[in-house]
Length: 171
Image (cartoon, rainbow, N blue to C red; front, top):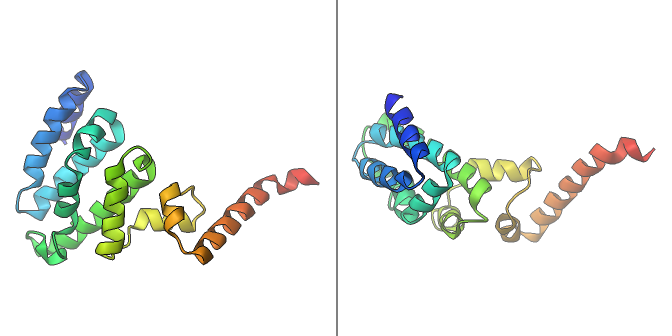
């Protein structure tokens, strides 16, 4: 926890420090140990959510981050220990879904990564799919990728939610 606070402090001092923090974290993220990667992933997530300059720095390496997060060809490519692998992958997909929902309009690498994970690797990203089903505003790229029937259902649900909130005022 102290390391996280020190890195956050370091990034707050000067946004240009985010590049150095990114390099340090990516070097550690490459370790062949899922437990270490999981700890670093939590730090990366906090920095992505907090600093635009960190998002810009990590965007240059996002392909590598995705491959380190889900494995190069399958989940069996993830390093030991085995009992942490599924937790690590699940947490990575959760964080990636959050990043995608919040920042995909600004970063092409997130949209490309989403397409790769979803279509090539056929992995569902929980935060994104759950957001669509709950009527949360989905990024335009996600809506465009849906089948026509799902788009209609999504739009009907969105309209019903809006009507529900203004319906009492119509009387």
